[in-house]
Length: 378
Image (tube, rainbow, N blue to C red; front, top):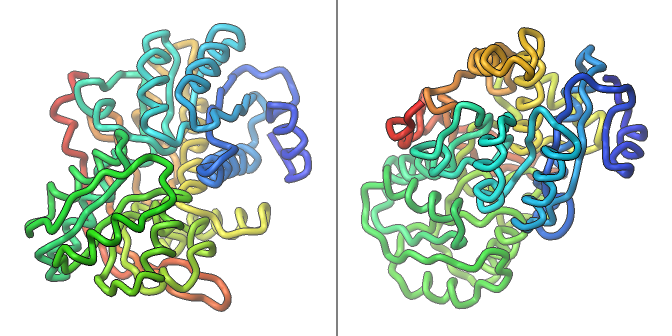
């Protein structure tokens, strides 16, 4: 399927990407409006770029906006499975939406390929043979931040995250590897934009570091308010709060901040270099973490379809498990619970010309498997 940017925009306006009658149908449920829209748009654009670069014309992608609402996501999934007869679902950004959609979808025999959300429940006891996560398990990047905090000499961290599955996984992951004390631990409201009360608590806490997980617009609001507050305690976090789509909105307040990620635009391999170049040429912006995950998810799907069809679920599942594709991350392999085993990098926010971006300064965790794989009964 060769989809130019204008043709892609027209197809998305009509609700689908793809023209000919497809042999394989993919339902993409993602966030395209509201405060988290940038994440879903990047996943969508990375996914569709990979399809456009392939020589396959038999994949139809039905794209719908979940509006970051679990009930809407469930309705869309039910319609795609029962009326559209999709073979594969993908696209969900938020873990609470994934928990609402994935167990029902996989129970109905549909394959789900996650380009983002990786709640602990689906990595452990709630794992399923038809569920694959191509990004990470939610805890992973936060575990790496905890490991980095130890190496940086931090011994009294104040930690905060939104009160939803990924937020709880985030603080659990940080505490799993962090060896110091906690000056405070807070769960904020999902979608919160005013952090004056939390920053006041941080100021009074005696902390020597602040770890936060606040994705999308939440992170933008927090970092701007934190910078304006005059509090000079160093902050660190996962890439979700320092990703390419966020940095320009945050501005200089993010410079020098250390964050952790399984992907960066400067990972030195030919696939990643070509991806960064082609994404910027196609869409006029640098790719984000989310765009890379969408791109890898599509290429995993394509690699499996070269071997088997979803109508033969056992063969298709085995082809997915083989993960025989060239990832933007370099080496890629699934663990026994269908979550990646991968390196997690330490990055620093820097300025390149007029653009804020990240550069790798180290590796926090090598060949890292999530903590829940042993609970998976597959």
